[in-house]
Amino acid sequence: MALSGAPPIVARAEAAAGRTCIVADEGTFSYAELLEASGRVAAALLDGRADLEGARVAFLAPPGWDYVAVQWGVWRAGGVAVPLAVSHPEAELEYVVRDADAEIVVAHPDLAAALRGVAERNGRRFLLAGEALAAEPAPLPGVDEERPALIIYTSGTTGRPKGVVSTHANLRAQVTTLVDAWGWTAEDRTLLVLPLHHVHGIVNVLCCALWSGAVCEILPRFDADETWRAIESGRLTLFMAVPTVYRRLIAAYDEADDERRARMVAGCRRMRLMVSGSAALPVQMLERWREISGHTLLERYGMTEIGMALSNPLEGERRPGSVGLPLPGVETRVVDDEGRPVPPGTPGDLEIRGPSVFHQYWRRPEATAESFRDGWFRTGDVAVVEDGYYRLLGRRSVDIIKTGGFKVSALEIEEVLREHPAIGECAVVGIDDEEWGERVCLAVEATGDLPPLPELQAWARQRLAPYKLPRDLRLVDSLPRNAMGKVVKPEVAKLFAR
Image (cartoon, rainbow, N blue to C red; front, side, top):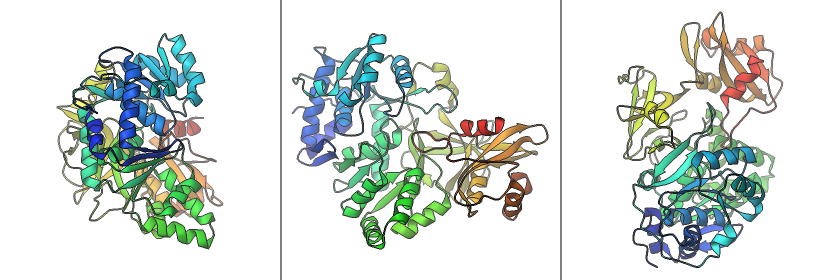
């Protein structure tokens, strides 16, 4: 099979042709089968053309074999992959199809109903994944690394989602950085439980596994019992998830009998690495998971626009509450409002530079220009460097609260408040206030009898400066979260605005 000019991750698969790559509901598949299947998808997309020449292809498939074959097929046809979220309603799917100006829309048969209507209303070519997988092979174009490969839409917590465009070279940089830093090899076997419209699932798990010639087991959706069964089997070597997933795994462990708990612990201890990211990991959760699994979760920092930028080390100290050190090939700096680097220990804006940084926001030149300063990407996160390790203080827009003349970190307050025995999870936001500028407000998912605000303040006063104390309290059944389990602060703020 000639792979001359194929995208980098595809070209590497030829050397691993006889190895298993994907285990999913549809079956077990080798790298050779992935090359054949993605070649058929590419031929179907081309439909007689020589090259898609950067045409966007939006596709909707549950995590599994069809998803991977279609994604690779888009790349091999010279197209730009636009993965759609299986959790999104039809209106949001249509927004992405229209905004990306997708020329072709591909759907898994189980999810075709909504997407077929979107394609018809917008005059886009519609294709079922099964039809594409059955197409006759055809000659495929060469694909230069500098061509766009992927458009991932941001979560849209501060406005309508923007399409983040990454080239094949960007993806290569993102993947090889993590393969090097986290020691991926062809002997690894991972379990994918994360959504595949997000950089965490696409790059950190799926692409890293396939770049390395490793095995990626895929669950169509996260299920705590099924995840524990995979861990108990002892066949996994590494696992990556978000704090919400670890919280549910801990709850399932606590409900298990002693015999099963022993199997759970043994399965964890056979693994070499467990990673957490996409949201702040409470120190209490890190410590509880370490008690259960024997693993100190490796925390890292990244975002759609940059892939991963910071990581606690594979070997060496993993510092609780820290997102670690700059990854290989990634330049980082912390600056003041004028873009001047600040000394260690001083909070400032985190900026990133390097080959992993995205190409542009799709058809938003002004937003793209505003997101860079002298070639550095402005993450919007506030950080501080302590003994070389980076600690995040939160998003400049939602996690830095200006109250009583002080700048305080919502994440810091949350970390302290989680130590209270009645607080399971919480979110702190700043709400406009005539007296304070912004008042500190707290929303809580309780695990016990939550005391009234004055009693909670008295407890917190022993741990926090007076200006950091919550001034308002809401008890909620569950905090508003996005698909990755990250709390959506603007939605939390609405609880207090009312």
